Length: 270
Ligand code: FES
Image (tube, rainbow, N blue to C red; front, side):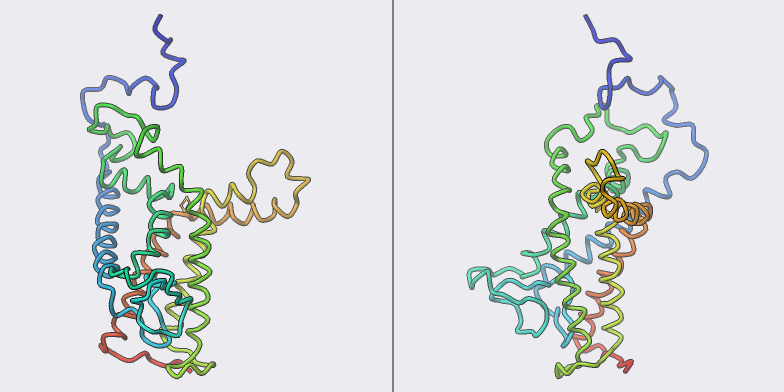
């Protein structure tokens, strides 16, 4: 016999009420997904150009966050970040492509970005209470979207990359001759960027679960409880941090690009 309606759950839930109109909303509900799609598209175009260019990513003492750590033999010689030629002379593409797969995978599978691009690009659904154009809904239960579950594993390489960017930021406190005690506009830009990247990474839902999940009694784990409280507070701002860190990483790369191509010199603050 067919399963009773009430017993069907999740993606197998009964469909929406049979309303003729696509939605009953009278506000400009399309504005948010349209703006989200435009913002994400701008970043994708910019970052694709920069990641494939393989040039102008180092202006002593600053290295672009798109290119650190630089792990190929074809990296430009630089005194910043880990710069190990793990990939030999057979690697002919841009070195950014080796490392970007990790932050990209982290963002692509992020809970917030999933919502953003499902709505912005796939209209699935375009907004709350607006019917989606697809006839069948399987959620993230099938290939390829079932791979979104890998997000929890991308968290660890994302922490490693954030640590490398922190190291790069510290090295930005040297001048162009690598003497310590310098601070330029580039130092501040890298510093703001790395702080935002850490806040975004630590506000991750997986991080929250790693820190405080699967515990029966918070009272028996006071340290984890305290950490969980901090991560939870950050987690409430995850969307804002996702956008702020996306913008800052692009701006940090653009700044290094402008220095490397000689558009202007890095203004010294002290
Ligand atoms: Fe967004 Fe993990 S949920 S980074």
